[in-house]
Amino acid sequence: MPHSDAESSVRQWGPWTLAGEADPDFSDHERHTHHWLLTDPQLLTRFRERFPGRGDVDYDEMVRLLDYVWDCPRDASANVTGYRCAVCGRRRAAAPPQSPVSEAAVSPRA
Image 1 (cartoon, rainbow, N blue to C red):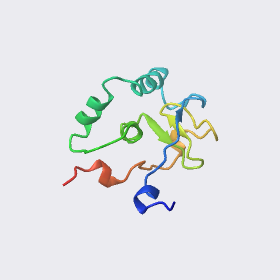
Image 2 (cartoon, rainbow, N blue to C red):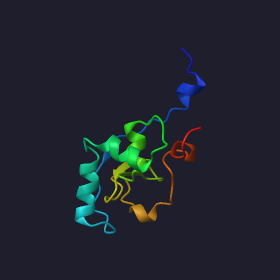
Image 3 (cartoon, one colour):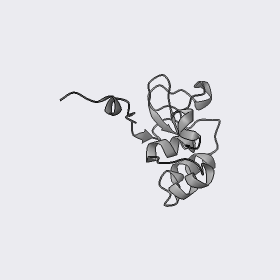
Image 4 (tube, rainbow, N blue to C red):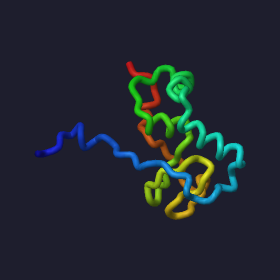
């Protein structure tokens, strides 16, 4: 059965990991906080406070927009902020700035 354009445009996010070494640009406290916040029962509330005009959002978009997870541009590995890429060892600061979701996703919807 052929896929529709809507189906093919949906991004498939990989599972996040903290298997990489500690990124020296972040403290142990920051690493532990980012990891904890990924399972925070108030995650949606925190997201809505920071992005009040944002409509529907899924978990993967939320954790990236909140900067709890970053995607390595070299291998697309999803890493907890504060840890190096689990695949290539790249530090977050060495990765070019990127937005995991479009700017339209961050801007309030009309």
